Length: 81
Image 1 (tube, rainbow, N blue to C red):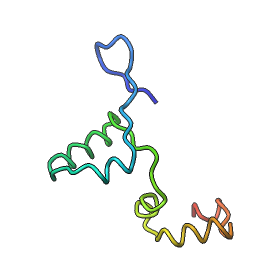
Image 2 (tube, one colour; image 1 turned 60 degrees about the horizontal axis):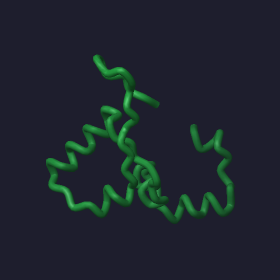
Image 3 (cartoon, rainbow, N blue to C red; image 1 turned 90 degrees about the horizontal axis):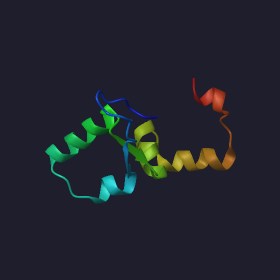
């Protein structure tokens, strides 16, 4: 998705940063807040998240996600409820 910027001839795609980069780069609290604001504004996109990071965002354990993937016991329609 491209964001329109007033006065720009064409929209520029957002910068993409991987989940591993977010974790491994040492940032101060202020730098982490600036990154979060950039993500929220759509200037930076998160990509290539690890299973553990996705599980943390969704509020479940990585082991549970792995179990669900193996058994495929929760249909997508039920999981969304």
